[in-house]
Amino acid sequence: MGQRDSEALTRLRADAADIIGRYPRARSALLPLLHLVQSEEGYVSAAGIKFCAEALGCTETEVAGVASFYTMYKDSPAGEYQVGVCTNTLCAIMGGDQIYAELASRLGVDPHGDEHHAFVTPDGKVGLERVECNAACDYAPVVMVNWEFFDNMTPESARQLVDDLRAGREVRPTRGPARLCTWKQASRILAGFGDGQAADGPSAGPASLVGLELAKANGWTAPAPAGPDGGTT
Image (cartoon, rainbow, N blue to C red):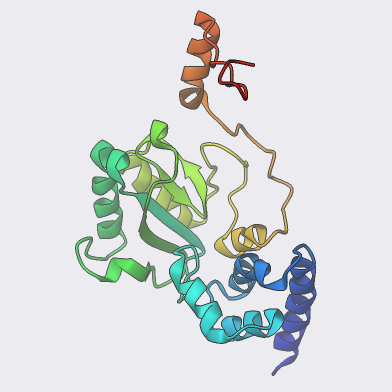
């Protein structure tokens, strides 16, 4: 092991101890620990699985079973900017399928083939994948880059987004932080080490607040909760 690997392992062990200390049972820290090792290599490698197992006192099979269950953990290096196109029902009918197909073609992969399941551009800059619902149907079709929202996308704006990412131009999410993190940085944040941007930007935009505004304008309120005897409290 070289000096760089040794320094990385020392750093990871310290961070892992920090994470594990936040939970009453060590095994409860597995999900953030998987994000931690992913932040180092860009995916959950065999070495990362072994590290988690040793840190938590469980088997590598148990760790691998969890890592392979959740699509947020990658088994091969992700792109520096991982682009996820929502193709669930609402986004799909609003144009998500077309956006995905055009981005796949632009990046040189058959949108109908199997290659798209783990496609990353040769320069490692952009990864492309289909994702399930991002709970942002009021902004359909939605694209996410390293889990940040890009709302109301069109094939044209999606192509421009990918072109800008590949060219290294500044890209700003529609909502949330002003700065877009890399995949490794986002993984470290999900491991529990914030970057100071958590409170940046609106957490909900105008489309998400329409129902609330209508309720206020019409004086609507939620029904009072029922009491123990069935009456309202």
